[in-house]
Image: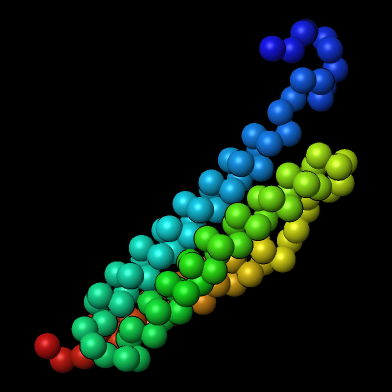
Amino acid sequence: MTEQGAGLGAGRDTGLQPERTAMAWQRTALGLGGVSALLVHDAESRIALATPGVVGLAGALALLLLVERRYEHTIRQVTSGGTPMGPRLVRWTAWGTVLLSVAAVAVVLGVAATPQ
């Protein structure tokens, strides 16, 4: 426990916030993987409809692998007094999510347009 009035950063565990962030990214990757798996399942052997799901699954796997690397990098940066800022990962994830969403809409419209 820290004493009251000991200073803003005194006694603070520098690993907690990066760990929570890494866990949030893992949940994001698992959600992306789940939606992508549903897209693949719903494609019913149609390659054009399964492609967005396969791309999403690959992206989810890549994100899961990157999360661990990013967590270790952040811990090293914070403990050495550096800044852990890294907008590239956020930018790539945002673009991947947007592309997967557009692909999902295309799949829904493609499924709705096919005669039953």
